Image (cartoon, rainbow, N blue to C red; front, side, top):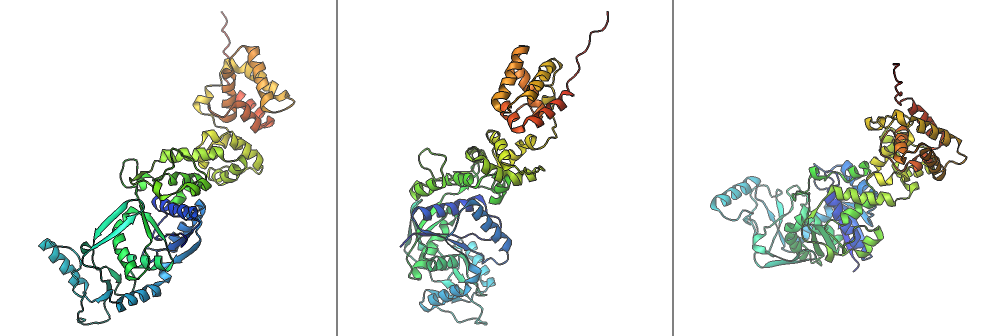
Amino acid sequence: MSVRTRFPPSPTGALHIGAVRTALFNYLFARHHGGALVLRIEDTDRERSTPESTATILDGLRWLGLEWDEGPFFQSQRTELYRAQADRLLEGGRAYRCWCTAEELEAKRDAAIKAGGRVGYDRTCREGRTPPGDESSFVVRFKAPLDGETVVDDKVKGRIVFQNAELDDLVLLRSDGTPTYNFCVVVDDVDMRITDVIRGDDHVANTPRQVLLYQALDAPLPRFAHLPMIHGPDKTKLSKRHGATSILAYRDQGYLPDALVNYLARLGWSHGDQELFSRSELVEKFSLESVGTSPAIFNPEKLAWVNFQYLKATPPETLARLVGPFLVQAGLPVPTDQAWLGSALATLRERAKTLAELAEAARFYISDTIEMTAQAQAQLRAEIAPAFDELVDRLERLERWEPATIEAAFHATIERHAIGLGKLAQPVRAAVTGSTASPGIYEVLDVLGRDRTIARLRAARAHFPSVATPSAP
């Protein structure tokens, strides 16, 4: 049978880092084996499930390029299937009706706690009980084995043994006929022919109950692989304070989807010392044998570094297309000349870790309103004014406007005035960018163009202090 994995999010909120890592590992495993990924929306929690959350999940997966092959299937639309399978277990003597009321169950629980015994359903209705009153008000419980062991050969955690005596007769259908989580999961996995269940190890406790349900349904067991949880840098469970925000928040902050996929793949999985992988490399090299058993540590700084590497490798024309929404977000117009924008962004790629930072860094290229920092203003010194004026004249007379000719104008000027390049380059940088740090000054002026460069230099000239004249003796 070909490999079939599934990703089954609950639409009760945003799609977070941990869930995306699970989706990614299922995706990579399926693609590596030439199999299929099934998307299943587990929306049986009617009070908390929303269409908005479903849309957010689908948008997040699409943005990351984690394409599914079948679905999305919605558990809320499959209730009849669950009821039919519950009836089948009832008829086969593998499940039973339980008429115990909520009050009775609470009393049993309190008594067990006081006696120091096992807290769980005492199986009052397991071997048959005359319905007390309303015969239509019951739940359907699974008739779990009372002894023996349930063994799971986990592909990540290894052999796990559970004592059946510690398991309870879990509820399959509630009194209103709605199915419970563990039952839905197994019925769906059987119906969808899932061969490999890859999920977080917070589901380990559910696994023995689900294994017993597979067996009761006479269905083949899938292979189980439980991934270690993701922790924050402080080694505690990942939460919003660590960056466990909606995956779409990373999109809105200017992270690239391939960079995020690369980073998440390395959270708990490795291939030697390699850090950066193309999508095809991840598919080719991924295996469950290389998944670690210790919790993975989410490091925002490492994610930013990975994104920086991807930004540097992105072609200028692609950057121009991607940065547009972030220019708008920064209050800047999107240039119609995309080729020019690409050339401008190409000079800035080494200075930004996200698309949002790249858009802000491009402000001086796009807007002619230059606001100088105090440090930049300090570069406009009276003693450099003669060399500055001569450079402006030389630049204005250049026959060709390109980095080489611009550099030649700088060198001719500094030689004539016997000054270092920095003495002249810094006030020019301050005049055209408003800052003391920028890409190479020749490349900056080349991108700005002759007219805009000269206009900015002449405007800045008015901000040079005057040289004080000596007073008469």
